Length: 342
Ligand SMILES: NC(=O)c1ccc[n+]([C@@H]2O[C@H](COP(=O)([O-])OP(=O)(O)OC[C@H]3O[C@@H](n4cnc5c(N)ncnc54)[C@H](O)[C@@H]3O)[C@@H](O)[C@H]2O)c1
Image (cartoon, rainbow, N blue to C red; front, side):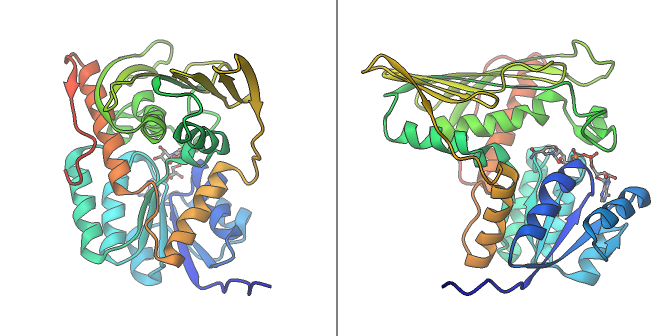
């Protein structure tokens, strides 16, 4: 029988909003190697409520003080987007392993600062591209790799809901340009970009259109992107903050078949040889967020590099920023997501 793992790691969660509550805090508390979770949020009410809910003793309102006094081995950055890069750098410079919510940064200059900070102490770094940990996407990737649909030539990804606030987020920062940077394009779009790259490989170009269609905000609430992959395959992404329930997931078309990952209805496969649709059973437990958290902590324990790491965060950021530029009036923008340093 295996020895139970010792609880040796102390984890901090900076930002006690929705994603911290549903993913990061329970993820650490459920991991057998984590001995303690420490919280930080400048809003006393949010901090105290979260401490109470998860029975957590230590809470700080200043992340710098937390990092200095507690020196945890792991930290999750779960704050509004504009704070990610500086918080990642502060933790990494102290030698603390970092799991950062998406997007890891809002500019390539910020990404470069992260790269330098990570290199200083050789810490582990992971970006929360949680769709990679959804079992249906993992199964679809295996099926693509084993040639089940032949040569994939087209992917469509759609993620839509009614918007992050109210209903999800604890504050309305998502709709403020100085905190979010971009709207639906960067929020859900960067998840979709990463998923497209995870499934079909590197992306060499993007053209995009964004719009504020229904919400009384100054950021985009809907975005469309057309992608070209290094394989020459094409892709399109539509993301929306104004959608009632509909399709969420992806469709991948290949020379020999089709894969449909429908987050509501499951994974389906059209086998071109047999001219037959099949439902592919996928075991769903634990959920993608729990699997993501386990992966990060396990990587730290085993001294493995987490996947998705910095280069994946950088590649998707490059595509999203290029898409935003294209949407603002540019033409087709050539980029290289294969680069190993920016
Ligand atoms: N991976 C996913 O599926 C997923 C889902 C939702 C959100 N996110 C990402 O998670 C991040 C947080 O989003 P959310 O939905 O939890 O928002 P939220 O508004 O619910 O939470 C943000 C929290 O950060 C706190 N905060 C603000 N400034 C801070 C500071 N200086 N120090 C510490 N805390 C601070 C706020 O008080 C708030 O409690 C965003 O980057 C978002 O893109 C990821």
